Amino acid sequence: MIKHALETQKPILDMLHKSMENGRLSHAYLFNGEEGSERMGVALYFACMLYCPDVCLECKECKDIMTNNHLNVMVIDRLPGKSEIVKEQIESLKEELSKTGLKYGPRIYIINDCDKMNSTCANKLLKFIEEPYDDIYAILLTTNKDSILQTIRSRCQVINLLPMDKAELKNKLINEGIEEDKALILSNIYSSVKACKTALEDEIFNKCINVCKTIIEMISKGFPNTTIYMKNELSYYSSKEVIDTFLKVLLLYFIEAKKINSFVFIKDIETFKKIKVNLTPLIDLIIKSQFNLRYNIDRELLLVNLFIEIDRRVINASN
Ligand SMILES: [Zn+2]
Image (tube, rainbow, N blue to C red; front, side, top):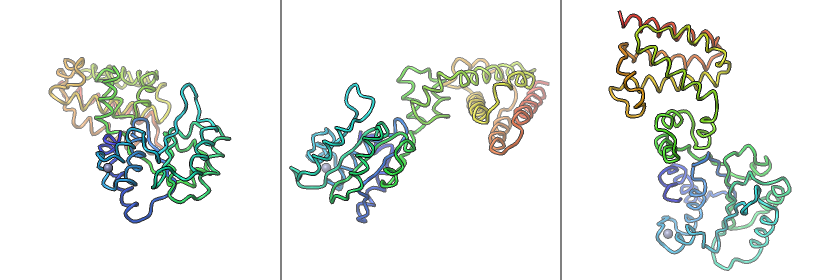
């Protein structure tokens, strides 16, 4: 976990190190990061750093922390079969920390999924965070900082972790059995495994992929009528978000089609090979449409204009 955090959250870890060196560590942190962002790894790194400034990962302190055997590092997680952290867990934490530690040194408690807490429990935690204890550090972990009680959030230093790297996310999706072409598309649009899986089940996302495939096929035949086709599809593109997703998928298809051999869209290679038009200016047109989408312009017009221009260039290229 810590090793993974070192690979993916290095700037965050460096920042924590600097805070420690400057004597500016906060007594309560909220690490907010998407699914897969190694929140626990960062929390354990923080604990190691307090005991072993080099975070060597080899000494007894580091090893005890990594294996959850350190007397002064407590990790609170939902109990098996429970959907929430229960108030008894916070009460026993309080009791534990009110005693003198068995081991000399700072004490760190890490609460995983701290958004999964009912209000009684959250209020108990709040009271605890409010009382200043020397040498006790609270680390709260969440995937959704907005669902944490505002009063708790305001007492913590909130640190937003970095989203997962696209290539890494793609590999994770492939390992979970998702086809490589879909994994590429998903990892370029979303930033967590969970969000990708949700999209996979979403009718609109799958529709976007099919529409893009059809458009590419039309272009490969040289006499496209993508404008008419898109006009019939317009009812699906009612929101800015859907058009944004659609344009991202379309852009990926065009970028892959431009390569002599796409190693991702293997099933589409034969179609890609038939394309005669120079795709570079078409890619520029899609990027320009993405840019224009940010402003309040007529969305229907935006799509229609894009495809009129695509059709025009494809027809010119086949003459
Ligand atoms: Zn060490």
